[in-house]
Image 1 (cartoon, helix red, strand yellow):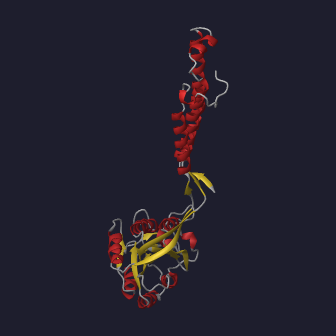
Image 2 (cartoon, rainbow, N blue to C red):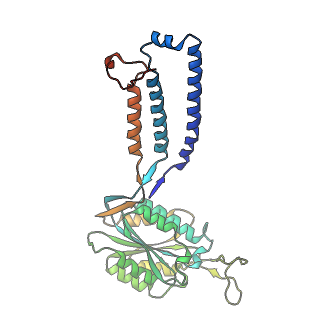
Image 3 (spheres, rainbow, N blue to C red):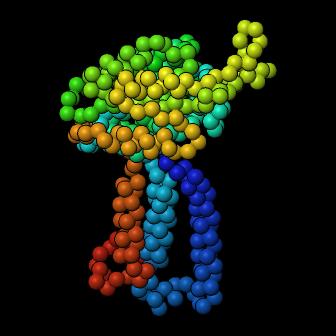
Length: 343
């Protein structure tokens, strides 16, 4: 697979024909000026050291160097780059609620978008941790297995939306169970889980599952998102502003803080409410910083590998050769016949 990282610079190639045309025009003009001074054959005998072909070669070397330079700044990328990465951190499983109620707009821009913002910042801060992503509504699914590739984690995170789990509900207990099975068997690394949810219509076994996780050494932290006063849920259907029940009443989704506190207490973690500030992120950072870290080694994949260094070497060689070529014949290389038919 091949691509350019900055393809906009390839537009510079449209200037190259103009440069070539300008060079040809100036050479024609120069020839005419020389012919005004006398017969060309006579002038050539008067300047035996002049080498027009060397002058042409220098131009084409510069022209080629400019073309290579354009390709270089466009950043050609090819193939897949694999690196062995060693980090010291914890194992962190993130479970995000993707039920329709997460589209409520009692936090800006809405609950789901705000949850993504919080988790993106948290992943940026916890670059040394291994991260797993779980999504849940009426059922729970592993969106991304445990990995140290935090860039991939953010890509998966941005792709999350309610359509990933068509069955509605809030299966927090099932999400905790999936999180427990997502961790490695390494006993030297601390393990923690973050659940971000509005807690509406949750299953009743969530606190029990959190207690089991705590016994296994997994800390369960809960981020409540939304407001206790609630907010209507925007309808995905056209022609309707908000979701309504069977009787036509607008459905109002409210944050269930009591449930979040119970799960966090059972999981020996903390509960924080997410708002439009960064207080929730800071509280989670402080809690995770208390955990013991361990060394982990894993493969990190990047879809594209930069190839511009190869072009940089080619560019350097072209410029060095251009500098070493004289416009005049070099007396030190009088007997070297690289240019047999001199003009």
